[in-house]
Image (cartoon, rainbow, N blue to C red; front, side, top):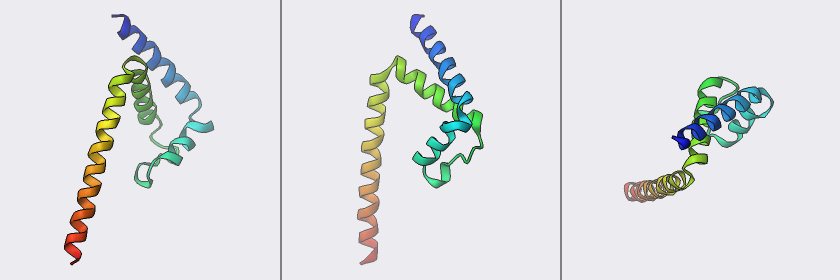
Length: 93
């Protein structure tokens, strides 16, 4: 139950501060990191604030789980990129 309360408090704080500072830096920071398809351009404020708050609160409560998921996604992405590269080289010959 304690972990739940820590998660809720962290979620509320991250959501509050991300929403408060959306125009002064959060939106621009997201736009620098994301590919063109996902750029916010100042829109979808509440969706991005909720996503950042959920990820931030979960990272605060379960950092090892988040790290393992990131490592797993990176490995899967690398394998897919290598397979796509290999497949494209086979089709050009």
